[in-house]
Length: 429
Image 1: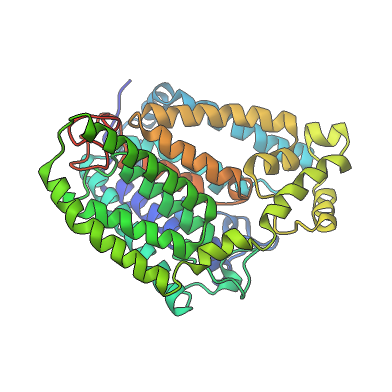
Image 2 (image 1 turned 120 degrees about the horizontal axis):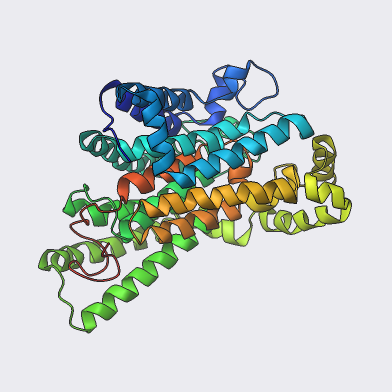
């Protein structure tokens, strides 16, 4: 199938759209006067402005090819997983409109735009991919620094009462960063750290890799995401263990890596000890001791099954009835699991059809990324499984797709330095 490199204004629109979704969280749109997360407002207000730019870039890519219909046919043939996902998402939209008579706009930012972003990111001109990777590295680093500053100072760039439509109060002590929510920023920091540990980010200068990883580990404590922190540390432990085994087995490592480690590790240990002594990590320790009822809420979720008929379970209950049940059981903040949230919102039958498409889309992403991208996928699944995430309106999936396709593309040169062996090992693509 033919592909056309995407450059010029369509590429610029795509990058601007991605940057806008990173810098402008939903709560900020609401305070700016747009009815993004509220029942009121015009239909166009329900779609993130960044999504509008991404769709503009998609249309521009089709026009730039010179033969838009041929471009569409080529995309259909080259990205079968995307086509299946778009079909099942369209089915869910029709089901929501005709059967549930509920708003379908949350699915646009959450699923439709990430799916349509795939062919644009894959076909971006290499120079534009370089720019987008630089943008991602810069954003994640600045977001981490902002999170640390917010935690230490108590100041917030986005006021906590508008950082999220629900669940974030003025008593919240965690940093929120540009993404507007502690868990969203923690998910991004953890995903980026896992990508670095598994050899992603080939354009990041060699000497910046260890400091970049260390910065995200510290930021994870400031953001206070327990699942993200645990999964990131687990990946770090496994990576370090494999690296040590290969070293003991006689595998050679780059002398520059060894020298950098001898310099950085003692400084990092000293810095971590100083931060711990100052109480910096108290926020994450407090989250493990007292999670503000989060774990209890996850347990209560299963009580919803007892209040539903077989018809409700198969095809989804009325939204008013589900809202009243959540209020009755004390889980107004939301169902803290993407999978269960989907089952309760839409029913088992529509959810199963949609999950088939999501699996196809995930397989398409894995097909176009390096083998170790499955580690990042496992991290992402753990995040969405323990939070509202994709069962609510969010740009999280689009961010995941962007990070993997740009930082871990299949066939790309491996990073100059990574945690495992430099020349061989488990991070070789």
